[in-house]
Amino acid sequence: MVRAGLPVAADPGSAVGIFEVVLTDVGDDQSMTKSLSTFSAHVQNLAAILEDTHEGALVLLDELAGGTDPREGEALAAGMLDSLTARGGAVVVTTHYEGLKALALGDPRFENASMGFDIATMSPTFRLAMGIPGSSSALAVARRFGLPGIVIERAERFLTREDVQFETVVQKLHDERAATELARSAAEERERQAAELKAELERELRDQREREQRTLSKEAEELLRSVRAAREELRQAHARLRSKKLDAAGAREAERAIDRAAAKIAVGGSLEPLLGRDEAAPAQFVEEGQLKPGMRVYVARIRAEAEVLDLLPDGSVRVQAGAMKLTLPVSDLRAAAPRAQEPRRAGARDGGKPVAATAPLEVAIQTSDNTCDMRGMRTDDAVSMAISFLDRAVGTGLRVCFLVHGHGTGALKEAIRRELRSSKYVSHFRAGGPGEGGDGVTLAWLA
Image (tube, rainbow, N blue to C red):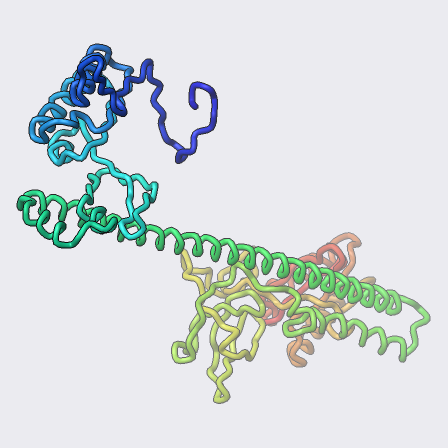
């Protein structure tokens, strides 16, 4: 089949030998005309096979050295096998000789194999068992086909102890192999079921991820629409505030629009659930019994670290993140990540300005209450106005202020920022960013 290019029904990775010649001794070649008995015919054929055997030859022998005295035939068969293998031939032999079956147990050149046979149905199973010699089962077959039991019993008495022990060992090996086959089949079935379950779980996980991705996409679109709406409200409110025709009612409406936009993006606002989970947030929760004032924790809601100020009777916790103080449930707190180095202490100067020990600052949303417009004023008057404004802002609880000084020559800007560096009210300040007025505005966070 291999030479002809035909597929071979074998396991993947199997090897098929390519032989130059196939030598066989199968069947009965006795001849009265040639004065050949069964044994004589086999011996004559074996002599020719031995002469032609060499490396690359396949020798197939059926019931080697049969038709003569079992002991002598067994010895002749063993010698024949030894000579054939010494010449380099690959030999397959069928035999009922127990001596040949035992030969494979002590000589690594030989290996036993047997075809399965079901005694109950008297039919072959066509399963090859490597490493296990076959059982002749002559008495069992005789009983199955109606030989009287008394004859079977007498035959069993004639068996030698060695014969009985050998057949017992062979039968035990077959039983153990059958049990092993059952266990292997069960293990393969479990492995198949596990593979199916794994594939099903992977499909469910993939589907779940796709559903989550679709949900996140919808939430992202909703977030974008909400941010655009808030931005549009801010733009319209600013436009009305800058309008010369704005009346008192319009000013109040503009102020309410700004406050609504600020509320949407503030901590706890309507847009906060859409921001999703912070992937970088520590996963370890903090037990209520572990909390104590002064402890550093991570606040998932604002995605920043904070310091515990108080443990309140209702089970909530008051924390401070920079200039911002919050009252939160314990479930919003995580264990703070260990710091690689000691942070800069509050009061250490950075360009002449005290810097807060923690980086998070309150979101800067400009309203009429937190804006001081000093454009067009003299420097001294503007500085006095800014100081008074900051004093009132601290008194009313504001956390961030917008000081609008414009660009001009830069003198007013420098004077305001110089005053902020030394102000006890201010913990941090910076120039305005895009959309905040740029360098013509200074944002100040209050202590």
